[in-house]
Amino acid sequence: KISKNNITSNGLIKIGEALQINASLQTLDVSNNKISDDGAAAISECLKKNNTLQELKISENNITSIGLTKIGDALQINTSLQTLDVSNNKISDDGAAAISECLKKNETLQELKISENEITSSDSDEDW
Image 1 (cartoon, rainbow, N blue to C red):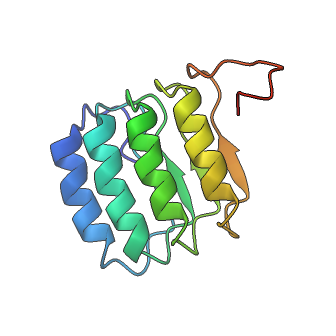
Image 2: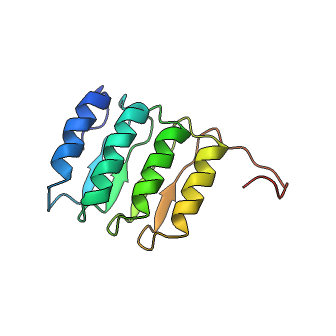
């Protein structure tokens, strides 16, 4: 657990590089840092190659729909992640739509925490 450490996207890029070859870590908690969309992109590259990480907590990191879309792309390939916490970020309707598309292909994710973002609700069929 390395939450609340002011880790920036540069720090997470280094962690992501290590996780691409790591074969034992099952949980990564980098919540409440400053990783933003660049850090989310680094994590997405890790998720494409890592097959042991089961839980990823990246809440409270100023991640927008751009970062979540990259993570969603990676989750279409990843076969190990079971829990993803992206709560309390800056994810909008576009990010929610992107992650919903990922969930159509991903067969391992069991829990998605996405509360306290900027996702709106609507009864319109035009919205996701």
